[in-house]
Structure formats: C-alpha cells, structure tokens
Image 1: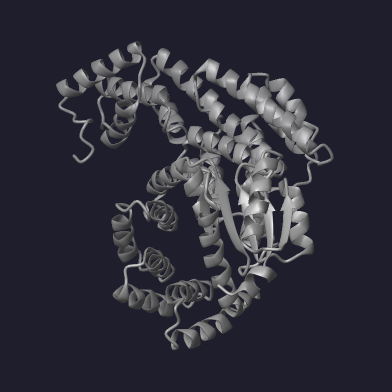
Image 2 (image 1 turned 120 degrees about the vertical axis):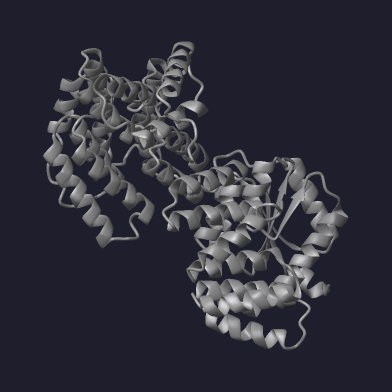
Length: 547
C-alpha cells in the first residue's frame, strides 16, 4: 500500500481505556500513521466528526459514558456525520451472539476482537483504506444521493475488469433498489447469482421480488435462506416484513420475534414487532418489546419522551387483559417508574397532558373510576390538531374505558384521518391497529375488565346466552387470555347441553388451541379435562384444528 495514503490518512480512535488508547497510538504510529485523533467517549467523537472528515474510525464497543460504540456508529450514520468513504472498524472484547449480530447489521467495514496483534490491525486498516481510497468517486456519488451517476460509474469500472468487482456489484444492486428500478434490479441480481452465489445478491433479489409483488418466489427463496447461518437473520427480517405486507400478522410476529431474539438492538424492527403484536392482541409481547425498546434506546438517537410513554402505555394495555393481581401490581409499579424516568430524562418537555391520561388509565386499572374521570374531564377538549398519534390513541382508549363512548369514537376517527393525511407519521401496520381498535370499541362498549366480570356474573346467574355473548366479546379482545378461553369453552358446552341449538365448533377449537399451549393451574386443568370428556360424549372434536 502506498506510503502516501498512510501518512495522509486521518484516523479517529474512540477508546475510553487509557492503556488501550496508548496501545493503539503506539501501534498506529509504528505503522506509519501520523494524523491521529483520540476520543474517550461518544460525545467527543461526534464533536470531532462535525469539524473534521476522517478516513478511518476505530471504535471500541465498550464505551460506558452514556452512548456505547453501537449507538455512536448508528448516530454517525443516521445523521451523516461520516461518509461512505470513511472506514469504520469496531473493536470489542465482548463477542456474544446478540452483540455481534446487532453490530453486523449496521455493516461496519470490520469487526476486530480484543486482544489483537499489531499485524492484524495493520492488515485490516490497509485493506479498508486502500478500498476507500480507490472507490472514492463512487462513494461520493452515493453520499451525494446521486445513485444514477453511481450506477453509470460502476458500469464503466466493471468494464475494465476491476479488482473490486464484488464490491462494485453490491453497490450497484443497492443503488438500483434505492432508485426503485425493481425489474432491472431483479435481472441484475439474477445475473450476479449465475456467476457466484453471493449472500448479498440473494438478499437483493428477494428485496426486488418483494418490491415487484412477486411474493411466492420471494417466500420460497427466504425459506431456503433460513437454513443458512449467515442469511438467517436477514431472511427472518424480510419474511416478517413480507408477511406484514400480506396481512399475515401472526406469521409476521413469529418471524420478527425470532429476528429480535438474534439481534435485539434494531429499534426499527422492535417497533414493527410491537405493532404487529398489538394487531394480534398479544399485549404481553407488545409490552415486553416496548420495555426492550426503552432499555436499548436510552442515550441512543432513538431516545425521546415517546419511548417512556409508549412503554407505560403498553404496560397498561397488558395489565387490562390479565387477571393476575400480582402481575397487575408489578406493571403498575413499572409504569410509574417509566413516568418518573421520563420526567428526569426530559424535565423541560411538555408531556403533562399525556402523563395525565396515563394516570387516569392507572386509576381505572385500580378500579378508582372517579379519580380517573376527574383527570380525563379536566383535559383540553380540543383534539382537532393531533400532536401525538400515540398520545391521542391513549386518550381515545381512556375515553372508552371510562364510558365516554362517543368522544372515543370521534377521536378515533380524527386519529385515522390524521394518519391517512400524513402517512409518514405512522406506518400502515399501526394504522391498521388503530382502525381495529375503533371497530372493536364501537361494537363492545365495556372495557376488558368489566366485560369479563359481566360475563362471569351472567354465567353464575345461569343467564347462559348473555354470558356466551359476553365471553365471546371478551375472547375477541383478549384472545390470549386462557381464563377467558376456558370460561367461553365451558359456556359453549353448558349452553348447548341446556338449550340445544348450534354448537360453534370454530370458536371452541380456537379456545382449545390456546388452552393446549398454556400452563394452566390445577383447577383449570381439571375443568378442561371435564370439558374434553363432555366433548367426547357429544361427539365433538375440538382438538383437531383441521376437521
């Protein structure tokens, strides 16, 4: 590698440990580098990137002052504080699967595991600096957002049997996808795969197929990619997004959950998982996901008041659908903690109205209805301007829970109209959830807790038809609550046995499907056994989903 590139290269070392920083300094100076800068925390690194353009950044993942290395690199990329022509090497002593997969999703130029030798460092730096130098022109086109010129330049470079052909081919594929030249991208990736089975080319082809609405072929390719370690994560992510596009939300949740388990730091994917979970009425999953978002987003570019508010909201939504008192108490305590964290983290932020709605819903959760109504009634009635979709939705839920049904429906309509006018404000999955909420709350006037209590009360009185209707509604809004499923199943059999009529086998099978996967207390397990015995006597097969 030419000495001139060495001597001119500006390198930023981000490392908080003095000994490690000293080792890096001595090593790089011994290798011939002279323009070295140092930062012992993320804030210093960002300040230097604002004032200077670096050729290479060598960053330790293990930074302890607020942002870690992952959060720093993500922010540098999102805010375009570094260019594509800047090389980036992560160094870390930690090599857990979740960390490595999360980091690799950001696509740094290299990942170096501590401890490493000077020779290892030399080899990695040489390779990256030479590539960035030689491909400076195409990187500049991409940085400037001029993908059309980038594609033309790449075509010209490829005609010369360029030694960087694999990299140039990948850059071209990415540019074609960004330009939405989907048919051309599809043909391009196919031609690359005819030459060599690059994993990135398979991913690119799938993305082109999805954009081209060729879903069956995309699914077929993704299923094979699931079987290979190096493509499993991206295949799960793409399958999740594809199933959302096809409105197959249960499958989407399954795929996104697996992807999140592998690489939990991807906040965008976590948000998609939370939204899909809501559509599936899986409020526990949504809550656990929002808790993870709150944890990983802290100090990152994603850190904002909504992170804490949404975690608190998700907790209340979950608590309203569970009948376990200790769980409700834990969630209530955690919700109050999120509200306090919000006030400490963003003391000057104007979120008091949204906090009041949360507190009203907490009062409602504790059966303190008068306190809840008092808080809600003192809020500003002007909702013609939606300042926060999440906040307005929470308020609409509070209205419904406290019996202000017309106000709730009016606000739901305003939120939906706002989202349709401003499609970037909320993705289509979340809009689908809001529409679902409006429909369910229009049909079912009671909140989840009252609905179940009402159903149990009617059942105990022997009013089986009314109990059956109430349990069916409760199961509609809480399809993952085993107690409700068991009560509905019991009511279905008792009602049929007592009054005759048509037995709803489809609902019975849904109830059994949930119960068969649930860990039931002894008394509930015994009730289920009796119901199954009753089903056998009545020659009703509720255990076989296909019949």
